[in-house]
Length: 442
Image (cartoon, rainbow, N blue to C red):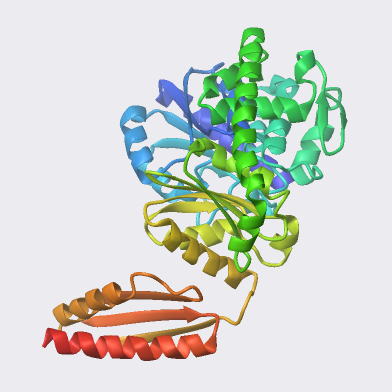
């Protein structure tokens, strides 16, 4: 824990050393239990130094960052429970920033506190609110009395089966704050109704899911009126979740049959988009022999995916699978056991791509990959052939993925298949299609 604590102290020093250079602090956090708890810890701490403005969001994208830059200017922005996958863009756009996150991260060495960079697994060992807590301790030692918020974030991200790693260290450090802990945790010195950590965490999640994140912040700091209102929100959230779950359970046999040869996919057309995450968390407890993917089909696709520790031990990494499956038509990523995506395209197309990646990770079937490269006299011919082949292969086969693209005068087709017979047939078909396209363009 020493190295990550040292990094937290360095970021606190960065904050203090640059305090006079900005007028305001912006906190941008995720709108689930973990993100709301992280935001509360940061607000309690940083508002002692400067005026603070909070923004709780479902996710960040390049467009989000561009809009945020116009608002923030040269002030400090602190990202909590998100930001790792955009660290290079954040570093490029913002003069003063800090990222406190626990999602997978690559090529990020700047102002970031992330357990993955110190040998921990952010899916199990530390939450986003846990990272925020480690940072805040250096600026406001009394924040320890709110250490339960870091653990609520861990519960919200299902890191309590059992608590381990840095989460366990925070619990041990909070001696006198927690009455007892096992899979659940019980908290002293909070409103009686909130002593049960699972229930407290669920209240915050309901607030975030039903777009009442600011109410959730008030619950974190024990505002009695906010707690009353949050209970009503939770009841509404519970009813909507039960309604959606009931629909799937009534059609359980049909769903099992439809998904017999693939992961378990659940398509929502009427359920609130924000419920895809909670739904996937409930459904993985029922359909726990394979990954569960819940897809909301309104405007674009909103996807939430969940796995189990057993599936992860077999090679599953849902974050990586989603990142590849979006294929430039959205954003995807997250943890090995839980992740999400936004996709601008056809649901069946996405399902084929995602299932292919999941099968590859779990080594289901025999995977063969090949590439055909055609070198033409000029760029125009290559582009024309690529266009013709794309039309012929708009719908990927169930066991085969075909990708085509041109780069100047070179046209390339990639073929991936689980069957050597299918692979050979597809290669033959592609060669015939290419020859036909060449003749048509002559």
